[in-house]
Length: 230
Image (cartoon, rainbow, N blue to C red; front, top):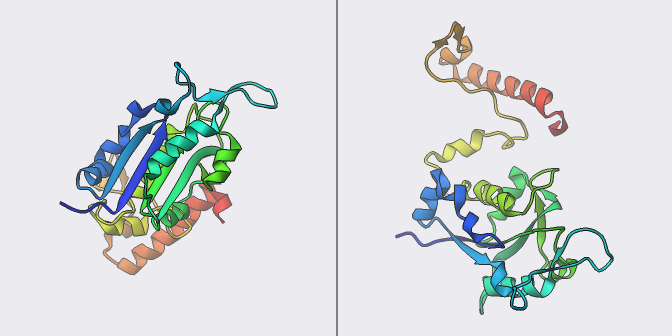
C-alpha cells in the first residue's frame, strides 16, 4: 500500500457533504490508492452551550451572523494535532480571497497538508484568519451558501495534479491554462458525423503542422472566450 504524501483536512458545518464528488473518478481512485487522504472535521462539535452555537452577530451591526473565532480556533488546533505538520497551509474559502487558478493549484502542491476552512453565513471573524495566517481563496466572482463546494473544487484541482492520480500524466501538459492559453478543440471518431468532418489537418499525420494548427486555434479560442488572458 502506498504511503500517503498529501493530506487534506476540511473543517465544515456539513461533514455529510464529503467526500461527495471527490469519491468518484480519478480523485476517488487516488483516495483509495492513498495518493491522498481526506479527513472531515465537524465544526459543530466545538460549538458553545447546549445548542453548540458556532456563530454570533456582527459587532458593528448588520445582517447575518459571523463564525466565532474561539470555535473555529479549536477546530483548527484539532486539525493541526498535538505535533502538527511542518509543511502545512490553512486555506479559507472566501469570495474575497485570491482567485483560484491553475498556477495557484500548482503552487499548493508544495504543501504536504492543506487544512481547508469552509466559511458560512456572512463570513469568519477576522482575528482567527490573521492568527492562523489563512490563505483566502475564491473560486469565482459569485456568492455560494457556504465554502463546501469551493473546497471540493479546490481539492479536485490540486489532487488531479498529484503524481499517480491521472492515468496519463501527459494530459496535464496540454490542458487549458497550462501555457496561458485555452485548449484547442478536440475530436474523435467518427471522422464524418452528421456531415461534419474532423479538420483535415488532424488527419495528415504531420505532427508539426498539427502542433501549429493547435497553437493558432488555441490563440483564437482564447481571444474570443477569454481576452483577459492576453
